[in-house]
Length: 193
Image (cartoon, rainbow, N blue to C red):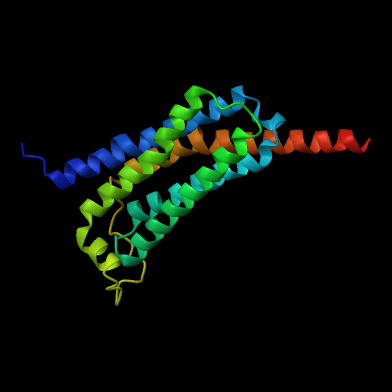
């Protein structure tokens, strides 16, 4: 049996621990929102922020799985990470003034904020040359999207992870937005009557 390389171990850590853990923690955060009846506290705006943060983490995930890492992909990853942190801060500020945030939800937020950082740090380690080109502004010939010959992990991994993400994270947050939208519209209708 071949000795595993640091590169393979790092990839395994990203694909089989950190990315699934991010989805699971996001789903647990959804359960905290549900338990706190987010829809009763002007939750539509907060729920839309949650969806936005999911998109801001999802974009780099799928770029990293399907595309070669170059300056453009690094820039998108950095931009998404920074925007995710800004939205996360505003989300907590917004929610804290409208509902109680449990200790469990606070603890989950710690993971939701750090997992993207750790994944980004590991991607940087795996793609050091692209990172150096990005920070030293050597962008010439590096601003393009190049698909990988085959996705990271395998086609089976991609299908399994996508299904897992849809069932465990995307559908619950779509339900949250729908529940908040429905409650907000029924409250507005009741006030007009």
